[in-house]
Image 1 (tube, each protein chain N blue to C red):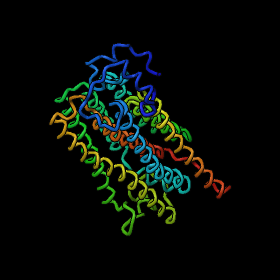
Image 2 (tube, one colour; image 1 turned 30 degrees about the vertical axis):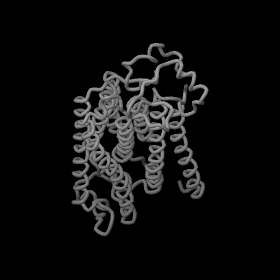
Image 3 (tube, chains in turn cyan, yellow; image 1 turned 180 degrees about the vertical axis):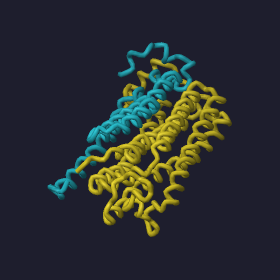
Image 4 (tube, each protein chain N blue to C red; image 1 turned 90 degrees about the horizontal axis):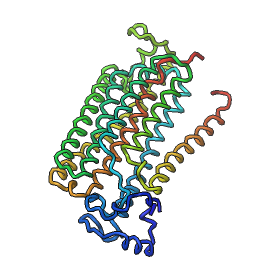
Length: 118
Length: 253
């Protein structure tokens, strides 16, 4: 029972109409969305700015780190995963994990076949 | 209950004693509760999005591999893209996603007028994105940078003659720029196709929202479309740095 921390009145709250049976349906407020939106725009400016500086091998690493951060906050807040059940959280996590496994396996195959040429 | 899908009959009985049943019109009889129905819907949408991750993932992997194999050609070709246009499109798409998120909120708090307004803003920004994309494609068409029979490598073999500061490529290496542009068009083209389909669905959602379908507690179509639209956003969040940004400072060999 994950929702024991929810106030009891939610169960009978007729105003919680969007999902009358469920206490945990979390409505993300416009203010929260605005903070996420501002963060995304700031990160976009940051990544453009960072691309102008010569950081050698770190240019792609920083660009991907910023993109990953942006992706994660979109998933957590715009896509509500932070407020979803464990089933959904594990499903999303498993999908990205599986993708990374596939990339790693395929890349190690390519690298080991052309050994020394990379 | 962590997962309404895994709820047993016995648990269910207890849950029913704890709170009153409120019947909602969208509730289908094969779901025990509207919550179970809602979670099954989100779960199904996420499974679809995971197949989309694998689909775009293959293209991202191809880009990773070929950028390593034909590094110089990818650097030169990548630097032909316009960073200001790419950055503007990123901001436009993020703003569109923000309005989509607000549309979900408007449906949840049953504000019909705001819901329709936010869906319209989401759609307009989607079209703005595609407009800029079309302009970029047109520039590539004019420069013969679309892979195929009329592809022209002369800019990459003799960049100085075109006022470019890129390092000149040998003719065989210059041919590999086609591979960059092939992936550029494949990735941004598939992304744009997803947006075109999304915009079509948005019109349908707008009509239904205007009818009041989603402002009386039935949020699932808006919410699940929101998941799709944000997913398309995320694909672009990765496409922008990979295609436009990471080749500005090529490594010396």
